[in-house]
Amino acid sequence: MKKEYPLNKNIKNHLLLGITLCLWVFVFLFFAEPFDIHKFTTTEKLIFLPVYGVIQGICYCLPIWYQNKFKNSVWRVKNELIFIVLMIVVGFGINFLFYKNIVAYNEPDTYEYYHYFKWIYAPALAIILPFIIIGRYVMGKFFENEIKTDKKKIIIKGKGKYDLITLHMDELVFIHSSDNYVDVFFIEKNILKKKTLRETLSGLEKSFTFLMKTHRSFLINPNHFKQFKIENKKLYIDIGFGKKIPVSRNLQTSIKSKLPITTNK
Image 1 (cartoon, one colour):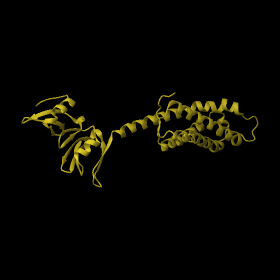
Image 2 (cartoon, rainbow, N blue to C red; image 1 turned 180 degrees about the vertical axis):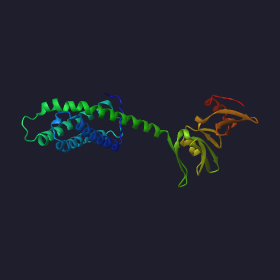
Image 3 (cartoon, one colour; image 1 turned 135 degrees about the horizontal axis):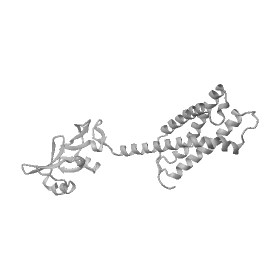
Image 4 (cartoon, rainbow, N blue to C red; image 1 turned 90 degrees about the vertical axis):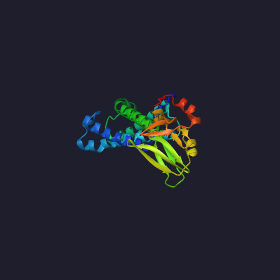
């Protein structure tokens, strides 16, 4: 019960699910004709069944106030069960009132609470609940994946008004500094591109701790490390895209311990 459960915290997505539920209920009732709906005339179907669909959509959306309380906290299995129970209770009340006061108004031998729940509402739940449960779970998983993807995004800001780059961590290759400016090299559509920002290398090193300093003028993304190369007795890192990054003598031991795959050429 205390286990975390995937929840999509975007209200718009739940409203969309409510609208989809509304349409699905109408189409299902109209063509499948369960629960004595076959006794309705075509006119009655076109009047009552859309209302039933709207009711189901509203009954789904009303308990959203409860899940909205957990917008900034963890949603658990027990919370999901409470949401479902709230939806069922609200749905039963509204559906019964609509049936009693509109659909079967002044009709003899109508269902009372118990029989309406047993013969109409419970069978309807057996059809509707799987759609809702699966829909909410899929939306929750999709939302979680979006968050995980967003967490991999980084924003590199410079001191200038338009000095800004938004990209995924893996798209950043290396950064080269020159005085008070830095050249940020990143991948876009499999092409290495460069953007110059007014910022210091030390400032970026503090902000993005996953980067590795190999030289007083270079920070690299270790995910792009290919191999070590020695040229003219100097150590370089092959970072791909035909780029070789120098490694300072005083950093060589540390760098080699962090990048153990060493190929000297």
